[in-house]
Image 1 (cartoon, rainbow, N blue to C red):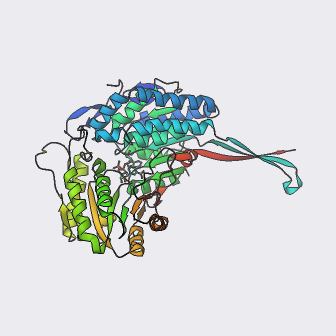
Image 2: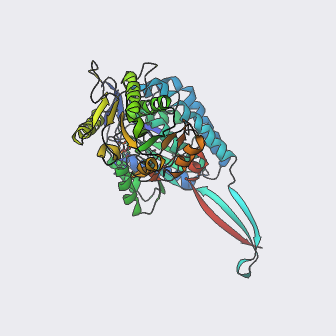
Image 3: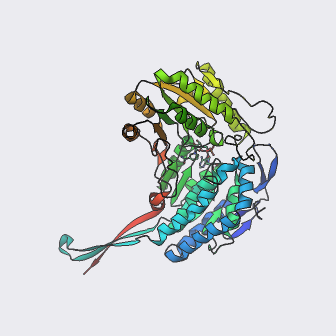
Length: 485
Ligand code: NAD
């Protein structure tokens, strides 16, 4: 196992908490304690922010593009060299199904560091706008792109490597310095990043990782005047608080928040394959993905057929041990998250819904925070379970009366993070895709998740984009310079 998981990375050193306090990280599939993480104090956070500030203000980090590209590539290579340990850690701590660690839970975000390094490598840091004579003064003009400064990165537990690296990678490549404050449920994923970063040439203070059991440290990071930009992923409720708190010091703000995305099946679609895909998607990582489609919009005339096919696939997938190679749906992250999901299941019944499959804990699994994949029927889009983010393996079926109605229902949501549409007529699917107000759309099963594809939300799903060139540019400022000639 990687050394230093019980310490924070502050100013280049792996340090225990200044109070000596630790907190436990659990295996959500077994409820066993995996080990301890350093429980940072506000003094530790203060030291991390001071180190990041110093590394930004007093070194050439932000101006030495070639060195940063080298460090980010080194970080990718170092993490790749530890892939086996990181994989086991991720399955154990996150409850991530093994197959997902070869994708977005580990291998993809590590490889994607190469993409941001390449973007920084070929980036036009200075653009020459040429000569002009504004206000009668002949001038040569340039537009410079510069690092935004010290980044406070605050992340959730559901895809910790993906989200940590989708912030840290572009921020470092852009020339920022970073204080990463991960979620208390998955401290080791971030501690491992801190420990492995020490094997690279990253200078002290450029990357700091501060684990804490207390959300208050996130709030302190988001409001600290020494932080220039807050990059936050988490719930919409917390995002609102972070944004309000950061207003005092007018920070730049990047928010990736919740979702309640629609999977639209049009009446000419291949129902069997579309509903199987909807079921797989809803069950993946027990539904703990902000971009997972959790409302299934089906043609009213084919409602029963769609319910039967989707329920059959969800029941067959079941909730299983994440270690097993074929598992799609593992455990929820915590007892608290399971209570939340079970609360929504009770609410679905109270609102008049029924379960076509699932609805409780899987039989014979006494340990672990498992919930059965559940298909809710009999509700319309006004039900709370159809409007609020459940973050569990729960899919709500809603009948629609044609393309216009499907678009209306898809858009009748406070969120706009992702979505999917299926039709035998690809032009028709595209027409629907264009009308859904959302940050990503899949047409007939297309996969948008990739290093070069910007990801983020409309409406209450967030502000800004992560990944792609747009995700890199979130960490840049723009400076215009004119020289009299
Ligand atoms: P959360 O909002 O409770 O916590 C997220 C992070 O914010 C954690 O690190 C937490 O310690 C910190 N935090 C809590 N209160 C804070 C405050 N007042 N100020 C600053 N930081 C604070 O979310 P969670 O339960 O960890 O994660 C689940 C949520 O994240 C879901 O709603 C999910 O949709 C969302 N999410 C969104 C995306 C996306 O890209 N849009 C990705 C993953 C998860």
